[in-house]
Length: 409
Image (tube, rainbow, N blue to C red):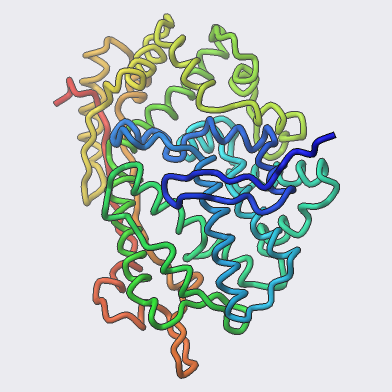
């Protein structure tokens, strides 16, 4: 009987050829839990602003796997002690770090299920896979949770200079066409080292770190926190909230029994069990879009109108401000929307709302990005850099927004 070749090569538009390093990792990629990521967009509704941003969590996870393999190779070449088991496990941990994302990634993170983060769900999926694979993911889970005794391996998974960020900045920059986010991840990886069990960047890599932090700030304002994307995500969140409400009073008619389950029941950490996880693993972007296409014809005006807004990209007007929105202005827009749509003011709140968003590229009060000098000294990048604006990047910038129908102008 011929044994299937599991050491495949995948062609990636960012890095070229990506090699799957082991049979176990191949089997994890083949698993339906992971294949679902092909149907989860990496950037939610950002494609409504940047048409090319239709790449998926599947792309991102494979990119992270590739960068982790390069990082481990670099560190081992510099004499850092990493066992074969640790090498495979840290690659598994980064491969599966986003496996818990639901439809449209962050956009619906707390809408399908209440108060459960994608990190929590990723861990649940990893524990389930660990049972299926006879405990072979135990060390990977230990690293993912930050409990492994080698701290630098945990930092590669989650820190202010982790593999996740090195891939998504470069990948999202490529697919959106926003050149300001294009970082040199290969250069950054080549400058990595380990001192006293902590990840450091060699002195000559400081300019690449500066570029990385500036690129992160620009990508957040230009892409991730773009006002139109923010508005679209808020509309989708409210659309699902309205669907749950309508389902309770008159039954929303859709064929998808899996989505029906999450609309019908309030799911949170208290009642999230293995059967719920299995149902969640069946949900993806297609389920939401299919339902929205049905809901655009629903008798409920709010549900129908919100659905049409998403499908036809006929969104609300968005205004960004440096100061909180005046409550009187919000009330004024509510009254106008209520009159224009001939609906109650409580229903008008689905079309008129305000909020805030913040951008913080670097958090030196949490975990540092440390620069390692030839004389053995280690400095935080914000004090090591001669870039005056790098200190400014460690201060949160808050912006406020208000969304309302265009007819309210």
